[in-house]
Image (cartoon, rainbow, N blue to C red; front, side, top):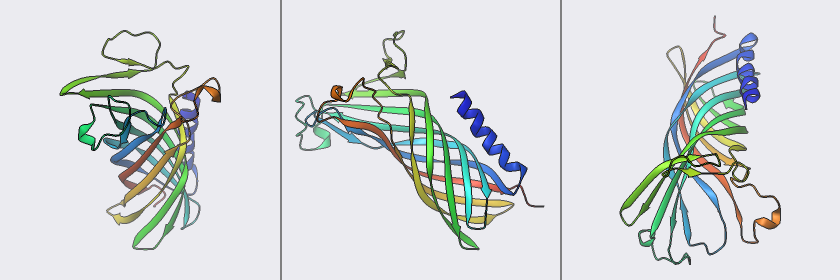
Amino acid sequence: MKKLLTLTIFLLFSLFCFGQYSVGGRLGVNFSTITGRYSKDDGSKGGWVVSFPTIGAVGNYEFTDMISLDAELLFITIGDKTKYSETGEGEKGSVSEYDYSNTERYHYFQIPVMAKFTFGTDFQYYGIAGLYFAYVLGAHYKDESYGEVCKGRIRYKETPDDPDDWYLNPDYNRRTDFGVNLGGGVSKEIGPGNLEAELRFGMGFLDHNKFDSKDDKGDEYKSFRNMYIGLTFAYMYDLSKK
């Protein structure tokens, strides 16, 4: 993790040494869920949660007026709200009839590297596509059952030291993620820099769970993967302007 962080920071700052480059900050909100199920009839219903903020630094290197490279260092939260039926049959008539709900939020340090394609002059429109690597810095959960609420942290360790915390064994629970980002936005010159508004879709490739073999998953198991839609704003300043 430390080597990857050092490499990414070097990539960001190496852009300053030549060509046309911009730096800035990004701030926004995230809508996310975690796909997956252990069996077809596990009695659960997944949902989306809203998390704030998505925040971090952006570096952009422009190869041409149309093509550039974005490298970012972001703090982003990805979560999920799952409702469960005590019957385990998953056949409740409405969400309000479920007996128990659990909300989980995982706070990631994320490193996206994306190609950016820009069009237009005054108002500019752009598309992005690329990959990201992410690592869980911390996590929290909230359980709600019949009007009672229980909260705590989610820890990646084997030995419990707090009764309110959940403990995930690192041997069977993955703390890293690797996935793809796709999206687009608009950009407008305001003051000394450009203000960007962007909508981004992200999908993780890695299952939250780790198994010794494929046979351990079961025939009806569906991988638990991150999925999110991010709405963010960035302000970029062109450092190559004279």
